[in-house]
Image (cartoon, rainbow, N blue to C red; front, side):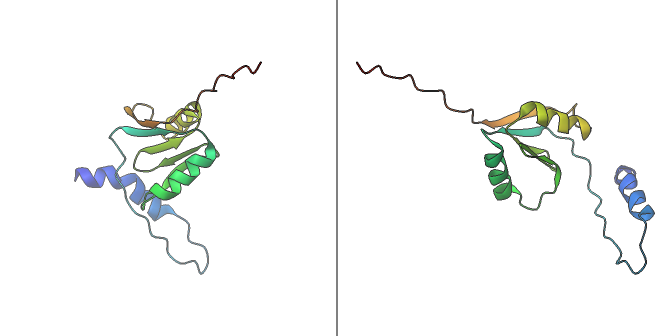
Length: 117
């Protein structure tokens, strides 16, 4: 019964979806709302974010995306913009979830120049 209550909003939304003339029925998958911590991976660039996300997708659905951030429905967040990722989490209602920084790859510091003289 608890499971049914938890999935009720998704099931109701599936029942209320409008069906266009001749449209194939849509399949809705009731997934429990994630409760565990958000796993945050911070990279140097949007390009790196999208490359890593493509390799880590493994059947997870993207629930938020911009040029520097991708958020998966299982709580994984890959970003080059921590503030932007935070805005996505708040929009998804995940602002209260604990956040675990899994990996952070900041840009390398500039090397000091050697004087030639």
